[in-house]
Image 1 (cartoon, rainbow, N blue to C red):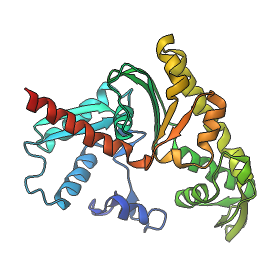
Image 2: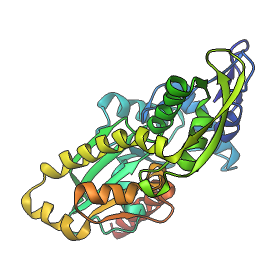
Image 3: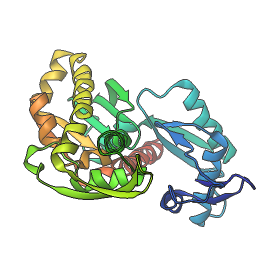
Image 4: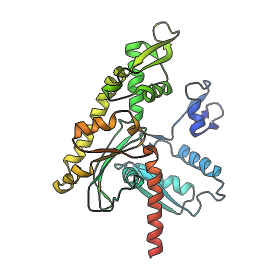
Length: 300
C-alpha cells in the first residue's frame, strides 16, 4: 500500500502501489500489511481487504459471509487472533483458517484425504511452507522465511558487494526472472543491469551471467532442501515410503525458478513435480475447500 506520510491517506494499493515502489516521492511510503506470511498491521490489512471487496461490487461487503484464510502451517496464536479481529471488523459471519500448504495441495488436484503421504513445498514471496499431508491433515510441517524475496535480496546484495552497483528490489527480481537458475546448463546467459555506482554515486550498468546468479542462489536452495529433509525425517516409515512414488510437489511462485525441480530431485532422491500455474495453487485450493464446506453443509 502506498501511503502519503503528510496526510496519512492511502494513495494506491496492490499492483499499482508496487509499480511506484522505488520511484515514489519522498513523502510516499510503501507499506506491507502482511510481512513474512504474518499480519504486521491489523488496521491496514482491514483497510486493504475493504478496498478490494468494494471493487467487487458485492454491496454488503463481507457482512454475514464466511471467510477462508490461508495461513502458514506454523501460524502463531497471535496471528490467528489478528485474522479473527480483521474478519470481525469486516462483519464476517464465519471464519475458517486453514493451512496454506494444505490449500496449495488441494489446488494441485491431489487427493489429500487419502491415507497416503502428500509432500508439498509452497515457495511463496516471503515464506516457504513445507508439509506432509495424510487423510486431510498435516502430519509434519515446517516453515522458513527463505523464499522468493530472499532470492531477490541475495542478488541485490551481490551486485552491491561484488559489482559496486546499487539496484532496487524490482531490478533484482527482474534479474532473477531473466537469468536466475540452479542449472549449470544456463550459465552462459547474460543480462545488463542498470543502477547507481556505489563508489562514484553516478548512474552505471554492468553485465551479470547466469553462472554468477547460480552461485548466489544455490546456498538458499540447499537450505530449503535441508528443511524438506527435516520434515521427511520425522515421518512414520510407512508414510515416508510413499514418497518414493508420490515424491514432492512444488507450488508457489518460487517454484518457477529455472532448474529448481531438477536440483531438488537430485538432492532429495525422490520425484519432484511442479504443478501448472503454481502461483495460483492456494487460490484454487481455497475454491476447492469452499466446495467441500458447502457439500458438508448440504449433507447435514
